[in-house]
Image 1 (cartoon, rainbow, N blue to C red):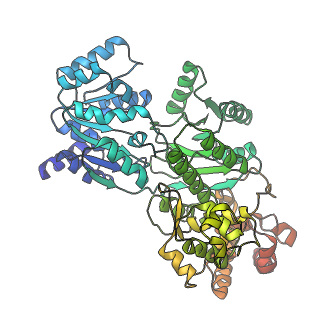
Image 2 (image 1 turned 30 degrees about the vertical axis):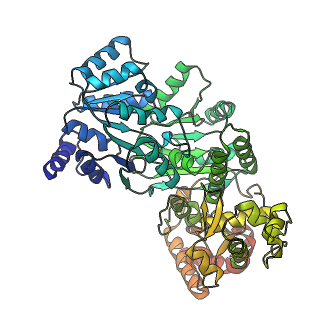
Image 3 (image 1 turned 90 degrees about the vertical axis):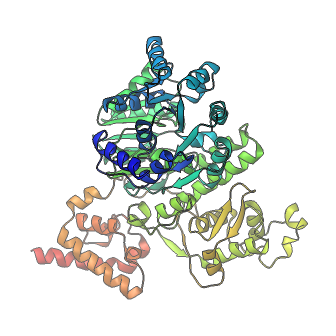
Amino acid sequence: MADRVEDAERLLRTAFGFAAFRPGQEDIIRAVLAGEDVLAVMPTGSGKSLCYQLPAILREGLTVVVSPLIALMRDQVAQLRGHGIDAGSLNSSNDPGENRRVAERARSRRLRLLYAAPERLARAEMVDLLRQSRVTLIAIDEAHCVSQWGHDFRPEYLELGKLRDRLDGVQMLALTATADAATSMDIIDKLFDARPRVFIHGFDRPNLRLAMRAKAGGRRQVLGFLRGHRGESGIVYCRSRKQTETLAAFLRGEGFRAVPYHAGMDKADRDANQDMFLREDGVVVIATIAFGMGIDKPDVRFVCHANLPKNVESYYQEIGRAGRDGLPADTLTLYGLDDIRLRRQQIEDGKASEDQKRVERQRLNSLIALCEAPRCRRQTLLSYFGETTPPCGNCDLCLDGVEVFDGTVEAQKLLSAIVRTGERFGTEHVLNVVCGEETEAIKRYRHHALPTFGVGRDRSRSEWRSILRQIYAAGLVSLDIVHYGRWTVTERGWNVLRDNERIEIRKDVLQPAKPARRRSDETTASADLARADPELLAALKRLRTELAKARGVPAYVVFPDRTLIEMAALQPTTRDRMRDVHGVGETKLERYGEEFLAAIRNHEAGER
């Protein structure tokens, strides 16, 4: 086995020109070369394809790669052939002659990798071809599509387990970038006869800057975000086909190379726009979620959601299309009450089973919790996938900060309601207890007699719903999305309940978002950083450190970096001008304004 791994390392350098394996690749390749069945969950851009390409080249026999998109098959076959590797695909976009040649090379056992869609692999004549071709491995890309709990379920993927049986239990490798615990278990159940080796190599994409904002200007907010990325390639996701057309036209009017993409377009136009994006620089695709799966463009510098995504998994996969080259990339998600209402309606009106609808409701709640998170955005996102991380310093909440208050008492009220009802109930029942709503279920379980019944009548139900989402985002409670959405209290939650830990709650998301007071075409702090006086910025940071130490709080609680950068760029010398600086509200102006104004005036006096 050691020799084969060494061969893989050598091939990695000689055939692909890579100096070393990326994290996680070597372990998976070692297991595949040993003949083990494998489920691999790896972040987008981590090099999943090499996990089956290298073994396919090193071993005898044919590797069949299941891919959902013709465009991806075409690109990967072209790349492999460019490396001198005999690969081909069978798909409807090939001319009949090409499909015949690929089939013959497979049948004569000259082909190393064969790409095909799951629909084609279900055909009897395709199974006969594979039986003649000595298949040694089936590699299933986007394996989450097999799961009813996944965000992109495709019924044709369910046939792949049967294909394995028809090929006498051939070895199988399933790969995905997005699978929570429920989805992973479903993949194993649908594709494997026995539990495979499972490799989960993290979901973190530290090069992606994460940001979410309540809608206050719609397309003008999108325009403001894009103005910080002129000349770069990116994707803007929209809710409807019509919106892709109108937003693309609006952005073209603002000087961007923006093209629409949606399933209702003429196929030739849709393919032309996709090819333009893949092959040229500085093209922005305005798309529905029909665009993106399998797109392997490494230099996408930004992804913007003009509307709330479907769920956390969809959000993660869609932003994952940015920064695949490992260089910094930017993301922005806009969300509003209309988005939430529409998504809830789509779930309720859908044809899914009640179990699936229940899971989708909880997934939507998790996404809203991410939008309203009171702490580092990346911490909340990764906790959804069962990972922990320190504050990232590369999200809007780390960089800009938020206005918070001590929400320990509010959290304790919710936690107590969850505990006193036996940690067996979902959101609405818990809220009914806290808000004092005597529903039939409340009376049946005698929960109106609990000490916590009605303790939250001082706040609205929508406020309590937001607080519940925030303590979920903060890791105080856990949500079982498969078993009826019941809430349970985590170890950290017990610390808060016992008064051993305090918790801060965001104030801004407890009421509907108001239009931004400042310009709506807000860009990142990079432009202000370029204009900021470095000596003044250093002085402001020193002052912030002194004030933070005196108050015993983190520095960003005084002012986040972005505020100081903008101060150093605009150099306000009056209270009215200071109000124009991002992040300076009235409370902070009263608390800190004079000291920072004095620092700016002293700097100007020193320059004179």
